[in-house]
Image (cartoon, rainbow, N blue to C red):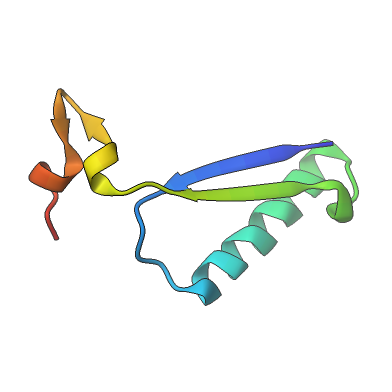
Length: 64
């Protein structure tokens, strides 16, 4: 069934991630017709040092 993968910088609380999982599940279930219990959501927390754009790591361009 549907699998949604979300990549984010670390730093969000467990409560925020729980809400994100619930809301993404609801939208994917509603739009795909899959039952909510069949929707899988994976959140990947990628450090800014491992994520870059324009040839530069975000740790250098977005240090906050």
